[in-house]
Length: 210
Length: 210
DNA sequence: TAAGAAATTATTCAAGCGTATAATAGGTCA
DNA sequence: TGACCTATTATACGCTTGAATAATTTCTTA
Image (cartoon, rainbow over all chains, first blue to last red; front, top):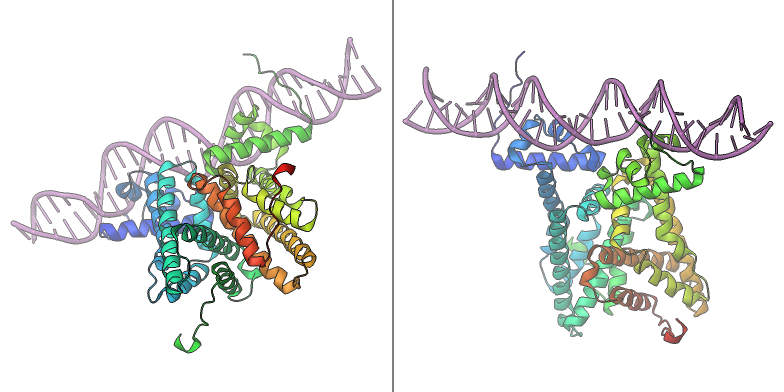
């Protein structure tokens, strides 16, 4: 019996593919469905290779969680432009594809459910959460300052907690039951609610500039 | 070798104990740790008994999810008193023990992560979500009406979506990182934010009546 | 108190798990 | 081209899994 032929991939590429395959498995079959063998099949390699790149299954899961958090937060944390644009984009990005969809949620929930079991995952989570909230807090500070409003640390902290909660909650609702809401309904609700919380109106979006 | 002695329990009691044991296992070790054998150990019986009461492992998980959702929503949905009191209690209940703690979150996330895999779980979730949001929507309608404000269906729907999101998000934050917040800080943020969203102040809590 | 129903334990099974190790093939460079 | 390194495949091991079935004990009731 001939062995199957294969191609030697650069380490970075192989690791990336294996992590991607892991995420696919989790999203499709849940954490329990993400077995070493399933991941290998999905990645088009044999199971042994996974242990060649990752010390254990726990390690590949931890790496995978870092990727998931990164994708959930990186775009929103890299908004550019004036304070108002940055704030608006931050909101919109978090409530539309590719951040808001059922795959993201299913990956996120899978890992969150293990945060209380695996301290390493808990650390990864904590870091992501604080970095996200800090980004939001400084967006708010800039925006309030620009509009000449109270931008004290206490107010920014409180607003960031509330708005972060609102965004998380609407993200959840959208991911879990997107079809219950109209096209961009959640984004509009978020923008209106946040305007109300801040006591400021954002200027209407210029449709021609999109 | 003598067999272990045992006691025959009424069906309802046994089923309850088995589900309780299942939840303990999930909270402690995650979904993967909730094996038939672990559940049996936790319940103080042998593994075979589980199959005597539940058709399969999937079935016991579904029953367990119903219980979890019930506990997360039943108290809030049963508030009594005038509209304002009911609304306030609804908010407070959802952000304090026993609804808000890390065990609840870990159970909730475990099941949510399977919603996209198991259609039966998805149905259970959908039902719980809609019932919760409807409860909130009618609380809002009553409160707005009492205060003589616009209580149109559209406004109530929008407000319910936003406030539901806010509560979910703050619940999440509290469960995942309760120690980052001061005593009852999240409750206060929620109450203040919701007052702002509604454009109405709730009357201060009468401390002596508690 | 004896018999019968069924709740519970005990045992077994095949399949799948994560991991370890040995064999082999692909790519690089002298 | 040929030798070498190592990425990759292949195979095996011991355990655990959910499930099925057989054996036994408890409890009710006549």
